[in-house]
Length: 583
Image 1 (cartoon, rainbow, N blue to C red):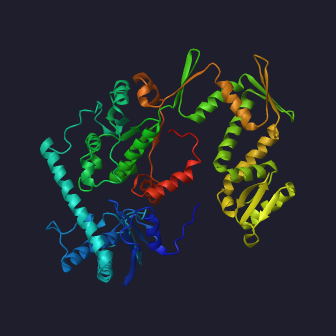
Image 2 (image 1 turned 180 degrees about the vertical axis):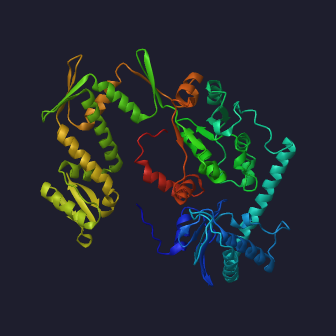
Image 3 (image 1 turned 180 degrees about the horizontal axis):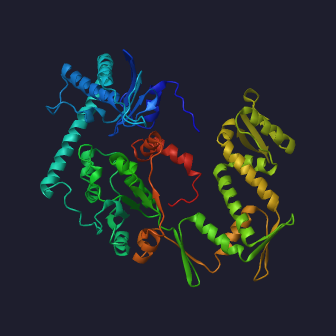
């Protein structure tokens, strides 16, 4: 389990939420107060995004559906900001007051209430229902927020300006919707011409495939089951809604087409999940880098604009095959590299026999299972060895069976002592002022750093798992010196390492086999699309879920937001872990 503790309380939590966003004011607004038996804490900070993130708690219980404490906060926020505008004669294009939606755009907030006798809507405790709490929270928030705005006019004017911009965009979006209504008689009443709809009228039995590209869309239309599968081709990359206001989003043709096809409408006032026309919305994109980008753009749209579709389990990602393999008259599809390796190794194990220096002989299923263990071991090894220093250190630890509890400076010292015993001729340079913190192993006049930070990059669990797998493989295969013999040809092949064994079996399995790698869905004909991706009896779908709202919000901000530096850091931190990079 993970334990989270924020030394700065909810204000520190707000900083964490806005970590990779451009904020309007440096320090979060924070205040707390008490009214009779009700205590509240409020912290908020505005960023330049177009979405609000408000988290409410009662007695440390996350009330995900809000309740009277949240209603009181929202009402007081809207009223106090409008009163501030009037009192300070701040000009506004519209004669209307700012709405609650306007003043909360770009807000990250936490409201925490402590209530003596809380009442909830259900046993799940997700919504507070105490009627008296609303008024008490409103009074406290109005008092403290009003004072804050007067004492911090620079921040106050930035917040008000953000609200006015949001109001302008809301009015522009409203006009755009009204224009669409006049054109179509009723908004979103006409299904798009690109949509190949299904015959089924029950949404629970209907599926909508959002397919990248007209070519693949055309093949999918021919290969689908017309009874319950609808196909909507999407041309090019849709708008990045992370960087676009609502009115601009409504003018994007691909997004308008998706909204129309789904039937739900869009926006807080008009979105209606009850009107959805399909209970399975399946994103189907190419396996290349452009396909991944389009998938991320579509996921961003649903996460930001239609989260209810994700929450109700209606959004899926198709898993088209990456390979088609053919040998003789038989052919098969392979979903990914792992499955391809498994099939190739299995084919090899049927005609190869392995002999090791410790007297072990393996063939058939035993050889196949051992090869799978090597593959798993290699996966864990590669995950840990993502730079040269770590690779050297891990190789030394495994070779000499040094198992460390990786958890601090004393374990680095243990590592140093072990290495000194094993390599007396190698020079270990230890910084006397930072004993156990900066260590250099000098091998062939080349210094390799073994630092505390280096070991902190290692997961204790992952290393322990790798270490145990290493011991099991040592028991079966020994350290090196293996011979593979082909049963049919009688030819023998000498191998030195476990990884050489796995690589040879993969290469041997490819003999006489034609392997086609699909770069795009358009390379498959209608029949192939049906038997791999559309047929419910054989296809694989991934359901989209949000398990950690804050973490998910942060990932979308990093990948799709305006800030370049966090995205660069994310890429640099993860680039070395990527095994198959499509450039």
